Structure formats: structure tokens, C-alpha cells
Length: 456
Image: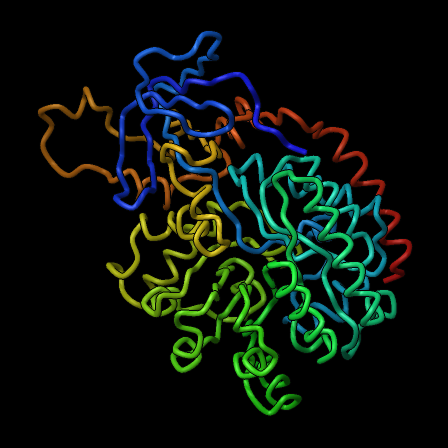
């Protein structure tokens, strides 16, 4: 359980990048009460209000990552120089098969710590097979908001026996863990995570559809990541991924795909108006040689798009600011420098990301009534240098836009404070509820055990 903290909090002297529909930039104090944004410039804060001086800082909505693998955090640097299918069969699947609840817990906490320190407050986690329960416990311990569940697989070339769960058993575990998460009533919500079309039987997919329809849970999977993957899908099913999803009934659900690199214009038209979203993972797509997703085209088709770092073995970090910057630069490369602004890029990890995850009424913008998931950036950092309002008076020449300044210049090093439900989870660049030294120590011990069991 993660109830909102009771003590009201006033952010004083803030410059607010609201990322609301009008993308307003406000110079106002911000009152947080009962875990939500209560007022701008309140005339009289409630008695006992804690005051946090953020004068000269930039305050944004907490960042949202629509696709991560925190269970792979221990495997950073262990699967280099491989394309997707070899990357999976030669390294990632054997390593995931060697997880247990304890190693997955520490892997999840290490990844969660990295996310929080870089300003990510909401994630959509694709999960694990062995160790899934430990991973979910880690996300809840860290206090992140998001969606998660076990990663479902029951067949596939090169799939280790430990990952190829029986179909009925995989579905039963997914439902039990999802219901347990739901009963906890915290920031974490259930999701059904069939890995991708090449590792799941038709029976498993149909079971996922039944569970999703019955419980109202979203389905989160990988699709259209690399051309050789898509070729195998066509060989096996006789049509492309979107055609298979249509046959199975997935397009009648809340379907969220990671990557969508090769989602073409015809396929985009097929999903227009559906509850369908794409998580763009530019760092991972570049590192695995997958290609460049057409985010401009996706947005033009009305498809909600989020951004995500994917996993440490294919990125190799979880810094959402890096993904924001890469996303914008790649669209400029493909479509021209005016095609994708800094504001466009920031929306992928804020208001647009919230829409893609079905959370637009709760997070992703700074508006009264929204949950107080916030990020404070220090402009004393050289990469965020800007002309102060006093110095700017009477000065000639152009002004730097704050959305561009953040999208193209900010990084994890710029993060000063992070709040979730108004609760400080990072203050002055330090974790509040997690012990990073302990996490690093236990993660090292856990990785040694995983490597011993994997016998690579």
C-alpha cells in the first residue's frame, strides 16, 4: 500500500512546465495536499505545511516510461553486439531463466533506483518468468507508479525449459499475481505481458484475451521491432503482426506494444481509433540495429506514443531524458528539423505517455486535481543555463525556449528532487526510501548467483 502522505507541501518560487494542453509555463508556488496538486499560488497554505524552496528550478510532471525491463538490470553489458533474436536466445533468455525471487527483487530495486534518480515516476514493466513475484515486490517497495505482471511464454525456438511454462500454469500465475497487485491497492496495477508472437502459443494468446476482457487489464507486448522477427511472424502465421492481433481479438482490448519500429501506414490505419498505443524505445532500437520508428507518422494517425528505455542489456541505461532527446533527434533526421520540437519530445514522457498508459486523468501534467508526481530540475547545472528574468529585461535577441532547453539538455545529473503522490522519493539527488549501498551490495551477490545458475 502507498497512501498519500498527510503533510501538505508547498513548492516555493517554482517555474512550472505544466505540460497541460496549452503547455503553459507558470512562475507560481504550488501547493500539494493529500498527494494531489491542490492549488497554484495559494493565498494561505494550511497550518503545518512543509515548504520546499525551488526558486530558480524547473518543475515538470514526473517522467513516464512506457516499456522497461527492470528484471534485466543485473544483466547490463552481458549481451553486447547481437541482433534481437540472437540477443534473446544466446544471453537474455538463459539469464532470465536463472532468476529467482530474490535475485529478481534486487534487480528490480537497482533498476527502480536508477529510474527514480533520473526523474521517472511511472513505468510499464514487461516482467519476468521465474522471479516475477520478487520483481513486483521490488517495484512496490520502491514506490514507483505503473503497470506490471509476469512475462508470459510457453513455446519458441531456443526458449529454455525454465521459461517455457505450461500454458495453463502461466495464465494462472498471471491472474493470481494480477489479483494480488490489485488487492494491494497501491500505485502498481496489473498488466498481462505475453512476450511476443514467436514465444507464445495460440492457446496462450486466447487465454490472455479472456483474462484481459474479464478483468479489464491492459495487454503489453513486443511487436514490429525488427524485420527478421516480422519475417518469421509472416512465415508462421501467414500475415503480419497487426493481422494476427486482429484475428486473436487483441485489437478489441487495451493493447500496448513496445517498439512498433516497422508499423507501416496500412497497419497504422488498421489500429486507428482502437485502444492501441506504441512505446518508442529509440536507444534500444539503435543499439540492437532495429531501425527508427516513425513517431511523426504514428502521432499523425492518432496513435498515442510513449517513450521507454527498454532494458539495461539493450540500451544500457534507464535515463528517460536520454530517450526524449534521441526521440526528437531521430525524427528531425527523418522528417526535417522543424518536424519534432522539444515540446513534442517532452510530451512523450509526460502527457502523451500518460495517455498511452491510460493515466491521462491522473498524471502527466501539472493541473489541479492531478496526482503530485513531480520532478524538480536544478538550473544551476551548466547544461540548463538560461538567462534569468531579471537579466533578460531589456536584453535584445532570441530567448531559449524552456521546453527545448530541457528536452535537449537535461539528464539525470540535472535532477534535484522527485515526488510521487507528493511524497519525496528523491531529495537533493539522494534516494529517500531506498538504501543504494545495500541495493548495490545485494545486487552484486545476486548476479553472482544468477551467473552460476545460468552457466553461460
